[in-house]
Amino acid sequence: MRLQLAILLAALPLLQAAAQLKSPRLESQEDETTIFIGEQPVLTYVNAETSPPEGVDPIFKRSAYIHPLRSPGGERLTRIQPPDHYHHYGIWNPWTHTHFDDRQVDFWNLGERQGTVRFAEYLEKIEGENLAGFLVRQEHIYFTEDGGEGVAMDETWRVTINNLEGQAYMVDLVTTLSTPLEDGITLEEYRYGGGLGYRGTEKWNPENATVLTSEGKTWADADATHARWVIIEGESPVPEGRSGILFMSHPNNGAHPEPVRMWPPDMNQGKENMFFEFCPIRHQEWVLEKGKEYVLRYRMVVFDGAMSADKAEQYWEAF
Image (cartoon, rainbow, N blue to C red; front, top):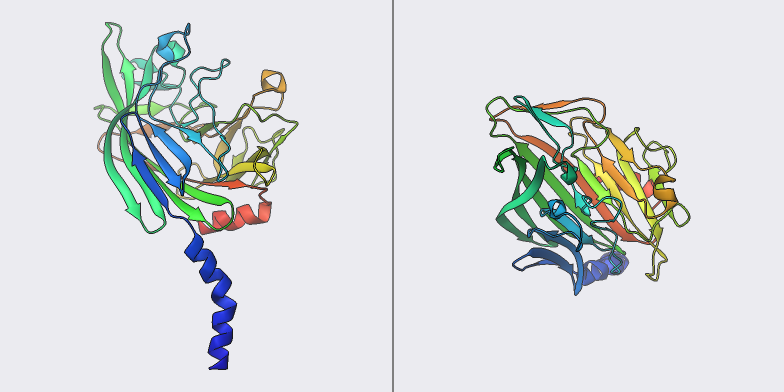
């Protein structure tokens, strides 16, 4: 009896922590869907086309992206439509150099007027114990010379959130690609394209933010290398003083450990230059065939405070 009581008392702090863990919940509006943890909004998916700032070419409008992504304490960690790259949209994943038949299409650089990515429909609302999320369908659209358009790729995004102990929560993003094109589509080898792209807050720069990859690379030398995980963190007004994101690539992804595109620290004169991407076609092309599905899995741990390499490795092993 005394042994049982001792075990219960030892486990009590963990039981109390679990009982106090706030479950994520989903709220949908006409233009967007937001996931909350308690009363704090942490992730918003935008399904309505967002126009660029006044005076900017409307070709840069887009839907189907995540913004804002916020730390557990409420600090905004993403950015959209920065003046240096109006086609950057928080967390998004268009493909850059592609071709099918005799047509070249860039779905990333909207200013090329060749294509875009567009929200198509909601498929599922996901709710469970300490779980909230959604499944949506998106279309990669190509433009034709006569002003028309067609669908080159269908894509589903399955986005879910679990709350974690401490100042952290976990986002799983599963993207499934297919093509209706009879002869398929080739995603060409290039340093940008697909995977998971992230444009960080304008507050971060090489003086107040850091990058560390699973292979020990930093902001200065991570570009064009491969990584299982990448920690991006920087100064933040939250009580912990820092916030960040641990990005993880699943080992079943075709190019794993996945190639990285990381803007160098001196990009944009070293200001407002936080851009990172897992880029599976960085070193090899990818051919999508009609009738097949292609899956990429990513996980993000969003946190306040600091993240150590050992902790990141633990998270990745669990992934």
